Length: 332
Image (cartoon, rainbow, N blue to C red; front, side, top):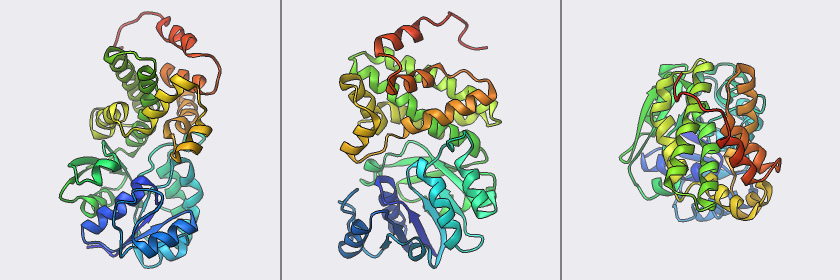
C-alpha cells in the first residue's frame, strides 16, 4: 500500500509514531535534529533522548533530511509546531513529487495562519497535507493502549490515505474535512491545559479545573467558527477529546508546566531547558491571539495565561481579572 514513510522529528511522538508504523509492517525512516543521537539510534535501535524503551531497529535514522526522505512515498512531521515552517522548505526540496505529508504538529504560524497551509505552500499543493489530532499521549501509545484520533485535510483522498497508513490494532483514525478547526483545537487546548495545571498548582479543586476547561472550550469554539471551521470538530476527538486528556493527564507537558509555574514562577525557557520538553501551549498563545484579533474574537483565558507567564501580573491579579468580568448568558 505504501513505500517508505519518513517521520520528521525524533521527539516523544515522532519516535513513537516511527515504532507504531513499524508495528504496521511499514518501512520507516526517522529524521533526528541532533546528529549524535541519530548515530546512536541508528547503531542501537533505540533513541537515546526520547522513548528509549522502544525498539526501532531497522529504521533508517539520520540527521540528514535528504537521506531520510530518499525513497519515501509519504512523510509525517513531528517537530515542535514552531519548527514546522523551518523544516517545510527542507522537506519540499527532497520529498518525491506528489507525496502526501501529515502534521502531528498541528497549530498556527506566528502570524496566526495555519501550519498545514504553510507546508502546502512550500509543497505547491495544500491538498497533499493532512493534520492529525486527538487524545493520544505517546507514553500510552507506546504501551499499546487503545486510542483514536482525527486526520483532517482539504482532500478526502489525503485524509483517507493516512487513515489507512497509520490505523492499527490499537490506534483508530477517523477522517475529517476540517483542517482549520482541527488546527485551532490542537493549538488552543494546550493553553487551556496550562491554566488547569496552574489551578492544580494552587491546590484548587475539580470545580475550578472544570470551569477553566469548559470556558476554554467556549473560546476555542468561537475562534473555530469565526475562522470558517466546523463547530462539530470542537465536540469530537480533536476538540473535547484532546482537550480533556491534555488538561487532566499526568503525561501533559502543558499541565505540568502550569503546575510548576504556579508553585515556582519558572519561565518557559528555563522549564524547557531543564526538562528537555517543549511547552507547546506557551508558543501557541501569540498566534492564537493574532488570529482572534483579526476576527474580533474574545479569548480572555488564553490572553490571561499569556500575560501571566510573561510576567505582566501575578496569579492573584489574574484571578481577579477573570472572575471580575461582567456577568452574562452562557450562550449567545
